Length: 93
Image 1 (cartoon, rainbow, N blue to C red):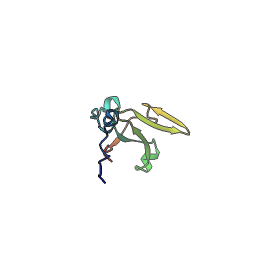
Image 2: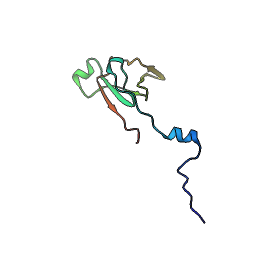
Image 3: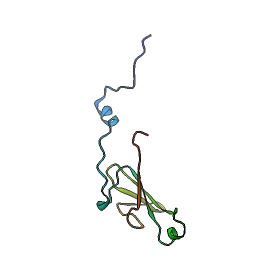
C-alpha cells in the first residue's frame, strides 16, 4: 500500500484560494485597516471607564463592518466616530 500526500491540490483554483495575497497598507485618513479589529471610545461612558468602547471588524480590503444594533451592520460608517485603536490579526491563524 502506497501513501500519498493529499495536502497538495492539483486543482489550480484551490491553489489560488490557499495562497494569501499581500494586504494593502494601513490608511487612517481613509479609515482603511485591513484584517483588523478596530475600537473607538463611547462618549461619556469611556470617560468614566476607559476600557469600555465600541468594536468593529475590518475586512481584508480595509472596509470596517460595524455591528450597530439588532440585525443591523454598518459598512464603512463607524457608529461612534473615528477609529482610535486597531489590532491587526495574523492571517495564518
